[in-house]
Amino acid sequence: MPRWILPPIPRFNAPRNIQYEALDNGVLSCDDPQRVQRICDALSAEKIDALLRKWLRRLPHPYTAKDRKAGYRYDVSILQAEFSLTQVLDRPLSGRVFFEEVIRENLDVGRPSQVQLIFDRRVTSQTPGRFRTRVLTEGVVPSLHVDYKHSRIKQYHKEGRALRTETTINNTRDFNIGKRLHNLPELRKIGFQANRRLLDVQKVSHDCSLGEDAFEKVVRPIEVDGQRAAALRFGDARVQALFSVLVLFSLQLRGFTNQEVRALLAQLLGYDPANYPVGRMTYDLRRLRLHGIIERIPHSHRYQLTPSGLRIALFFSRTYARLLRPQLAQILPAAPPGNSRLRATFDQLQKEIDQCCEDQKLAA
Image 1 (spheres, rainbow, N blue to C red):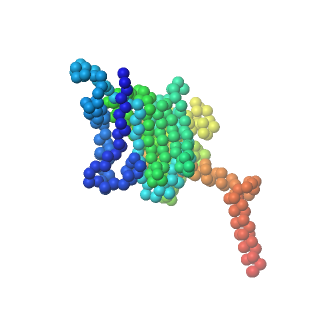
Image 2: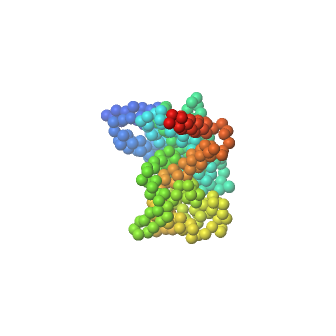
Image 3: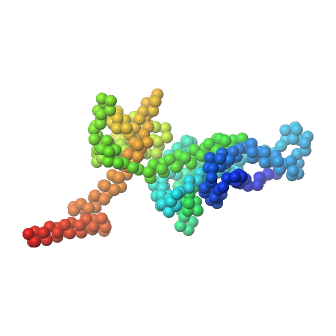
């Protein structure tokens, strides 16, 4: 049986009375974004099928009217489906710096434990396919690629003006969905959800803000409705371990239980997870809840991070592990001099202060 290939369907047809500026195959700006979005969302399986039927009525093919009446007809299958999200940036240069940081912070997103959450599909050692993250550079423009079986997510800085995230499904069987055209709405849901999940994680990684008042609320004891909770002190090893566990991507989508966090926390603190006290974990969860870091999911024994709690946990853990601890080790006098520019600067500052004190003493 011959295979019919439909001509490419334009992703955006300019409607009348809407002024717009194109961005390759997308829209950079327009007078009526809501209407344009409705037009884009209107592309459906029914419209694609209608286009096929239109050309079948005009082009010769082996099925006669009698054949079609008996139920013999061509059908459309989905060989590839792409679902993209384009976010136009008001400051393109800052957007490129942002995207390069996004790539650096998300190189592990292609691991099976991460990919199964982005696509909401279980991945085991028996799952076929390649799961990986690739960073490809064309000229000076990098792009992030995440593979899942035969499908992938690609993210790149589009024409220096926008952040483009697109999920391409090359085999609908990757998601236990058939290839017939009527499955397009279900594929659309999977594709756009994958885009959003990836962006949510990246947004949190680069949108930290913590003021002095918020800092004091975390590091000092608190009382809420007559219930007291101990402080979550910044330099405390147990607190840092708690925050490091809470920001794990695997705990973000469905929440977590006492047992799940306890097993991970015990490993970070060097304890046997089987012997880590349940009461100690309950105490820590209570502290986190009263400080507003986590909240209980209604009608369950699971918890989830609050929006501000996720930022605080991320800020505390990243600042301590990447800035304070390693840099402080470099500037202490007991540390070897090495080739640290930070250490050399502090040594020079100390010399200048000593010289200033000496000069003042001689003048007196």
